[in-house]
Each structure stands twice: as C-alpha cells, then as structure tokens.
Amino acid sequence: MKKFILIAALLFFVGELFAQVLIGSPEVKNKSQKKPKTKQLKLNSIGETGTRIYLLSNWSSSNRTLTENTGLYGDPLGERANETAAQVWSFGLGIQNDLNNHFFWDAGISYVQNGENYSFELNDSSYMYQTRYQYVAMPLRFNYHIQKNWFHVYAGIGLMPQMYISSKRSVDWTKGNQSNELDEAITEKVAPVVLSGLVNLGVLIDLKKGFSLLISPELRFQLNSSYDKFQSYIHKNQSMGISFGLTKKIQ
Image (tube, rainbow, N blue to C red; front, top):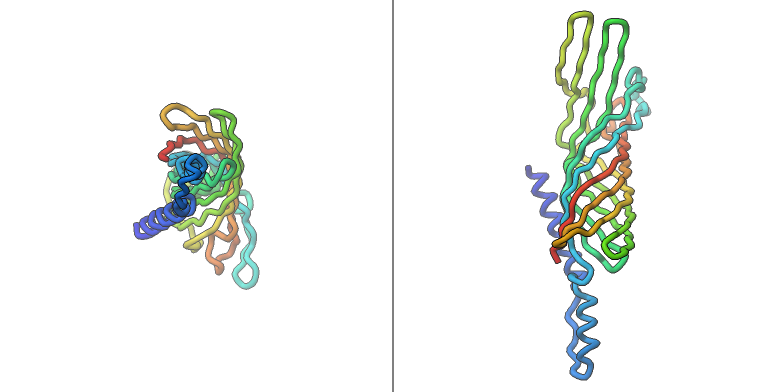
C-alpha cells in the first residue's frame, strides 16, 4: 500500500509540473494591441490543446527470454527451455496532456501481469503449470499524433518502472485416474523493481461529451532481469498486445 501511495503522489507531482510548464507565465498587457494579446493567451492556454484522463485494459501475449546466469550461479535451463507464451490481462488509468498540436505525453498507474506456461504429456500422464508475476507500474510515454477531424493517429515510446507485488505458479497434473491442482511459490528470488521499454501505436476516435475511444497495440520489453542477480537464470519479459479504453477531456 505504501508503494501504491508513493506512485500516486509522484504521478500527481509530474502532472502538476507539466501543467505549470504548459500554462506558462502571464502575458504583459499592451493596450495598443488587444487582439494579438487575446490570441497569444489562447495559444498558451492548456485548454487549447487539451488534458484527458484515461481508463484502459490490455490483453497481451506474454513471453520471456531465459538464459543461464554466468559465473557460479548458473544452472542448465532443463525443461524450462520449453515454456511457452501466456495470455494475460493488465489494467491502468492515467492522464494525457498535449504539449502542442502534434505531441502529447501520458503517465499513469497500472496493474501489470507477465507470465509463461508449460505443458508436458506422456501416455496417461500430464504435467502443466502457469506462472504469473504481478506488478504495480508507472508507464510514461511521449507520443506524436496527427488529427483529422474526429480521428487521431499516434505513435509513441516510453519507459515503465514496475514494482513487484506477488507471483505464483498454478500446477495441474494427472497420472492415470489421479489428478490434482495446486498453487505453489516459485523458487527463484524475484527482483523488487524492473524497468521495461514501451513502443506503441494507436488511434483515438472522438465521441460525444468529450469522450474518445482508445485502441492501441503495444510492445513491452523488459530491460533487466525479473530475478535477483544471484539466481540461476536471467529472465526478461517480452509482451505484445493491444489496449482498449476510454479517454475523457477535462480541460
């Protein structure tokens, strides 16, 4: 909970800082040029470009690179080399703020999941598991966008710090007439913070009353290992998915 409050406070501070930059300093009054003064105020106004809040969900195919750690700590990958991609859902909310007619930034707070699956079958026996890693994340992106009436197209890049919350492995096995399902903790010690890079494309479709529909394919790639440096493997998530959501203009 303390981590979540810290992220929320940081997001508020970043939003206030950008708002102050966009608003700018007040104009010096000039009685002889009233009309140019009015236009200049309008261009510098945060309401001219716009501020939006957003709420979205993200579906991703989550995979990972897994390599043996170097030095004394490494172990052969064994059956973990046969792990496959997992289908995961994440959720987020945040703020978008236009810097000018073509650039905007967005920042938010997200609940992010990564994971991988494994399955093995032989005769009347099977063994499978699903591993999931949960994080509280703070994505920050810078985007370039083009607007044509009610239709916007944009592309962006960014970074996303992720603070670890929990992980689990759901195991399902059968042998003849016997079967069992259980949850077990993963054996690797997980890194408390990881950093991911973001690349996204997207469209915004303006609706009524300041609402817009958001659709955005996104690539997410982890820059450091999910595991502590003393673990047997270097584990880096790679996810490709699509976000759906709504934005609401507030200024």
